[in-house]
Length: 167
Ligand SMILES: [Zn+2]
Image (tube, rainbow, N blue to C red):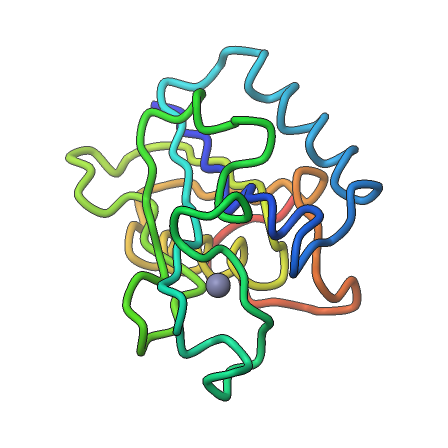
């Protein structure tokens, strides 16, 4: 089985409060659309950062980030209505007191002998963390991050992808 994982392709990460900017996002988004349009995936999973308004990661609470992806706001919506392609949406960061960059993308899946391709935002935080967690929790899965389908907050970062392959 081939799975595509779209990590946090949300307005706030594209051109909102934590936006990488539309210029950097455009080629990554084209790459993602190409992957989707090739039709090689049996399943598409999307994660969304989905925070309560007083989340601990926001600066007013002493966290490192500006307010972003507040639940049920336009900034938390998927860019370009991309959620219509998702078979499953995983919401993360819902607990006000817990930072959650990553989730196990295959949690609850019956069969974890899958090829899972990972793209989205942002390369050096949630993409890396999801790839690391998933690859370490499911050694039978083949986890591949496509850098061309991602944008980093810090282009110089060297994140830890765990057992995932980066192409
Ligand atoms: Zn967040």
